[in-house]
Structure formats: C-alpha cells, structure tokens
Length: 300
Image: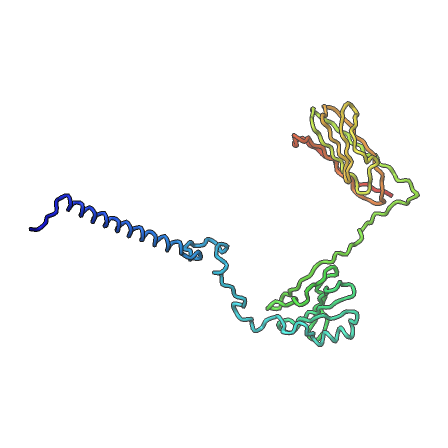
C-alpha cells in the first residue's frame, strides 16, 4: 500500500521551492548590480570627452599639435643675406679712404644690386647704435637715411623690401637734452629781486557756497608767502593754500558783492613768459564758473 502525502505536506514542499527560487532570483539581481557598479567605478578618469570646445583656450594642451618648422620653403630671392657680416667692397674702400673716423658695420645690397645700405658707427653713438647711409653699387654716396637725432639698433635686422622700394631697420631717437631757444637767465645775486603783486577782482551776482579760486603763477615767479593758513578780509573767511605751481583760495560762503584777492611773488628769472590763468568755480554747482586771461610777462 502506497503512502500518500497529506495536502498540508504538499503545500509546504511547494512553498519551500518557491522561496528557494526567489532567493536565487534576488541573488542574481544583486550580482548584476554589483558588477555594473564595479565596471563604472573602474572607468579610467582620462576618458575622452564628447563636449565640443567653444574656443582654443578650452582644448587640452596634449591635443594641440605644434610645428616648429615653416609651413612653406623660403623664397629663392630672399632679401636676407646668408652672411650678414659681409661688407660691400666698393663701400668699404670708400670708408677706408674718405671716412676714416667712421667704422663700417654692415652693408645691405638691394634686390636689384644697384644700391646698398651702409650701416656705420661714429664716435657720437652709444655702443650698439649705428647710422644708415645710401650708396650706389660702385661706392658713390647718395644721401643720409637717418636724421641726426635718430640712431639705429640691432644691425642684423636691417633689410630691403622684396621690390627694393623700402628699407626695414629698428632704431630709436636720442634723448640728448637741447637748450631752449630763449633760455632763462638767473638774475645777478647782488641785484634785488623785483616784486610782483598779483591782484584778482571778483564780482559775484548772487550768494554762493564752497567756492574754489585757483591762480596759476608764471613760470619765472615764486610766491613770497609759502605758509598755508586761514585768512579773513572784507567780511569773508577763506583758506589760502600755496602749492608748487598755483595758489588756491577755498571760500566756504561768498555773499553777493565785489571782492579783491591779492598776494605777492618775486621774479626769479630774466626772460619773457606767460602768466597763469585764474579759474573760479562753485564746487557743488560747477556750471557757475569763470576764468581770467593770460598776460605776457617780461623780466629784464
């Protein structure tokens, strides 16, 4: 007689089988997730980016290709000589015979071979500077290229243009001080310096506040009062400040009326020069302003 299982026993067996299958499915899913996480974590940091750069500044340096050679070959008739120190014989003979005080540094022949530049040093130039003259191919002098106050630099850079109509060279102007056309002469020490009184007449048609009066002195005069201080005159108080080139008057309140501002200077140099311009302006209302004229001053 066969033994038959009860329904409860069969249900328990099927429940165990289903539980085991669920555990297997969950384990498989966890394994797949773990594998994907491992692959993503092991991805190299220098992976290629797909973002298109908007400018050359955003392109990584390792992706830029540099070439340190010219893109095209040099022209056959290049104006740069193979030997930059080579000197034209006819011009060298001219310097040896007629210009012994000058030292020929280099000659640059034009593309057509009819003219040449003579780069030479003189005793008046600083080390490394030169002057440029233009010669014919037979050594005949044509004209000077550089003016007296201009000196060339970097002689190896001098060259002709390909068509022979222009020349190229580097240079700079000399900074040698020159005397003034009408130099100022100091007055003799035993002579008493003349005194100049500066007088400003001011007329105001309304009450004003915070007014600035600036008087620029002449170039050959010096103020006698060099101490800045507060002053009071004609019913107004103001601050007078003496500076290097001008005298300043700062007025807090300026009622309507006429006023006179006066100070003294001494004439230091003999000559002819212009006096400065006096300017007055309301600081917080700059549309209210005025100025004087400049007067020619002659000291003998």
